[in-house]
Each structure stands twice: as structure tokens, then as C-alpha cells.
Image (cartoon, rainbow, N blue to C red):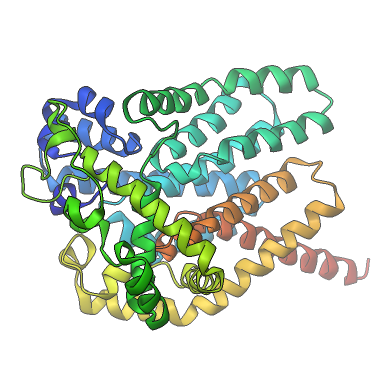
Length: 435
């Protein structure tokens, strides 16, 4: 349970367990995963077994959704079962089922969003519209970078509405289903009231500062520039720099422990502290100045982040470095290392199939102008992949973890392409048989 006590996204576990609602109110981070963790703590206490079961249940639910989506996409039953099993036993899924990140839940929500979108495209019922927007809302409340997924969904649904003969039903269902989006605006309004920032997560500079520091220490030229002109970009914000180094005055006390205390009950930094909001703005200003003054360095940084994004998703930096939490602590390292090596060797072929499936889906969709639900869904899934890839602009060396969340969508495109090839070969074979 060390993850709960140290990872920056979590509120102090005793506060989650005993003061859940007030803690969520005063937290400036996206609230969903803290809500999940708080409910688990209230029900089961600090039980590692309970959280392990939760992660496994998310994995099982993911398998059901992947299989249902492939079946609805018209993939043959046998191929759908095989593809689903391959996804579930892949090293990235095993990794994040055993590590208390929100990645496992995020993967399920991405896949559920795409499947719900397909069901809505097939039949514009209010229940499926509600499922689409609920999944997208949950993603935004889990990870603020997914906030713009909501208008993207609205754009796709508008396109479906224009091409549908059921325009009234489509419009009414979409409007009713969009109700969960109000939760996003409610959280943004709460943050504007408490922290002066109308956003899901006011810590943009804090997060991007982590990414720049990772780059600055690994690139000699960037390090020299920061050492000379941007010294704050060499101080990891997660290491709680003092006010003098960060260039900010200590914030006034509020009387709320979550906002005032510099550390949590277990001694780790309290990243929910108002001090980190002040630090975050300092990093935002420094990063803007850096990008303006050195656009070439920034583009080089983004290019390396893009290459990291397409690494195998089990090649997570903290896993490679032998981190003591979660996966590397609770599993047989020798056996898993051999399995990961095998997966990494096959990964280029998998990536080629992913790309072929994506191109095939795009071509098929373009030819039919996205009129049918299958092509519209594949286009929507690929749009999610493209949007998610924008994480390369705020890297922390974790880009391949971000990709792990959308791998089932890449698999879906690839499997659909493979299924189409197999069906075409069967048709050609049947046509060659003399009557």
C-alpha cells in the first residue's frame, strides 16, 4: 500500500478513509480515483488484497468489453475470443493490474467509451448516449488531459446526426446523455471558487515541470540552458522545494489540513497542499519562457517523447529501474522478465499490425464517408488514440504508460483488418470452387 502513501495523485489515506467528501472538496487534483480509493478504504481498510481484487475485476471487465466490441464490429467469434485473450495476457495489462495506478481503470473507460459509441451509432437510444458521455466524463474526472475528449465526442455525434434518418431520436438521446458533463463543469467551478482556476486540474505547471526536469537532466544542452537561465526547471517539483528556491511566498494558513500540511501522515510530501499550486504557476511561467526562447530544444524533447510513447507499454521507466512498488515487488521477476523479453521481441510485428489496421480502418471509413456504425466507431477509436498521443507534450518518461490505456483500441482496428482479410480470402476460395 506504499503507493497510496507516496504517489502524488492520492490524498492522505486517513483523510480518504475518515473525511472522504470534505477531502474531495478541498482537493485540487481530479477527484475520481481518490473517490474510488476512499470508498475502498472505508469498506476494507488499508487491505492490499482488496485493492488487488479491484484491479483484477477491472481487468475482467475490460475483457468482457473488448469481446463485446469486437463482436459488434462484426469480427468472427473465434478471432474475437483469441484477440481478447491475447490482450488480457499481454505484459502491459499484467503490469497495470498489479500496480495501483489509475491506468487500469482508464483503459477500461477508453474501451467502454468506444463500445458505447458504437452501440449508440447503431441505435440512438438514450441509454447508450448516457453510457458514452458518462465514460467520457469519468475519464475527464480521472485525468484532466482527457477533458477535451468531450467536445470530440459531441463532434462525432453531430456527424452521425447529420447522416442519420433518425435525427429527432439522435438529437434527443444525445442531449439527455450529455447530462453527466455537468459534473465536469461542477468540479471546474469548485476549483475556480477555491483555487482561482476554472479547470479540472490546476497543476499544469507542476505536471509539465516534471516532464521538463526529466528531459533537462538527460540532455546536456537542455541542462546547460536551464542551469543558466531557468534554474527552477532543474528542481523536481515532487521533491517539495522550499519557498526561497521556488520563488514564492508560503501561502497563508486556511485551517484545512489537506491544504496546509506540508507532509502526509506517513511522512511523504502532501501534494494537495496549496503550496504546490503556487509552485505550479512558477513552473508554468518558466516553461513558457523556455519554449519561447528555445523552440528547437522543445521540439527535440517532443520528438523523443513521441518515440517513448511507441515503446512497448511494459517498458515503463520505474519498472525498468527496479522500483520497489507493486509489480516488481509482488511478482517473480525472472519469469516475468523472460515473458516481457518475448513480448518486446514480437512488439515490432504487433506495431506493424496496429498501423495496418489503423490505415485500413481510415481508408474504409473514407470510402463510405463514415456512414455505417462500424466505420464511424473505428474512426472514433483512432481519433481517441490520436488525441491521447498528445501526452507527449507533457512527458515524464511515462509516455508508454499513457499508450497502454488505448492499446485495446489499436488491437480492435488491427483485428478488424485481419478479419476483413480472412473473410476476403474465404470469399475468393469459394468463388474458385467450380459449381
